[in-house]
Image 1: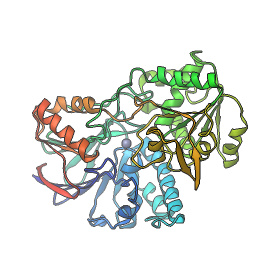
Image 2 (image 1 turned 90 degrees about the horizontal axis):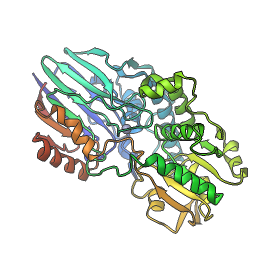
Image 3 (image 1 turned 90 degrees about the vertical axis):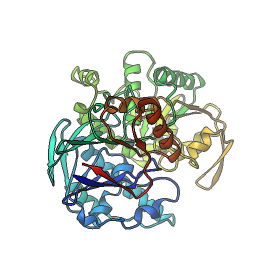
Image 4 (image 1 turned 30 degrees about the vertical axis):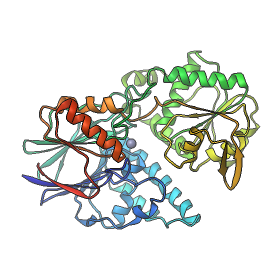
Length: 452
Ligand SMILES: [Zn+2]
């Protein structure tokens, strides 16, 4: 059986995952994400290069915007099939799409492109989700089945295994870094014929996974010693919850004394509620801690800032304090007001715990900028800036090779996607050299005929 596989986007790029399978009788999509980065909003609003009405079903690996952010647009263009995802993914998607729409509206106000979908499209898309449990196998058109297993990347993230006849195709989605504060290890597949895999960190190693918690606590203690403000720009989904969990454990075990901590991100607050309600997606020892009565996202000192007024009131708490706010790369959100206020103060520390994209304010801070332009104002940077890489939610270059190893004997081709071109090509070469597999980094819109 021949199937056509097309990489519409999400190749030579870490964002915008959108891959299509066409068997002749069935058309399936895996993920439908936003293409992110500077000056990309117009690309997202272009009409899909395929007929959205022809798609029978959409399979979603996880709820990051670069995997789900164009689903309402697909619906607007006529897609009316089922959307399969885990329950946690479906619940998180609701908040992530509302936020994506909000960001698009703000961009439009600043003279950017108009949003390419509206609230109605979002609601219709959400009503089309069909929750799937880990390990459950669902039937799709043309005798294809799909099974979702834990990818260990964010809450509810899945590796999707498609079967048809005696052929197996694995779509990795994003693969978790190990260990993660809250999640278990990715369920690495063993025997398959084809694999699409991510490569965000295809060319880089995470240096400080083992020492990350010690580093985090050391930075908190430094802030306390300086009697200053510790600002943590954090991604609202997974990073924030992982940090809260680590701090929860450190405070409750007495490793550190409690300190005022403000969670100042409406999206992170909503996402944390989903986490609180879905412990079944977490690691077994975390579930046990919750069963034993610990609310892992509540500890002495933690305050949640729901409203704008709550956010502004944070400045009236004097002395050492921690502010966790979005966005993770400081390109918008409540973090900017705090950076504007506290960066000129030498007692401030900024802790960067995630990837900082080229051109973002976070990247400029990381690169040692002495002044920054925030809301039209030139701001002096006298704060100390620190980075901890080990909290990345993505497998690094060695973990990615390890992911393929059990399937190396049977795999006919590995499609390396979801990474910048340099990173994808580096991983392609390592997979060929270390495992002797046939690996390629497809180009945008490139198609392949596969035996599936
Ligand atoms: Zn992701």
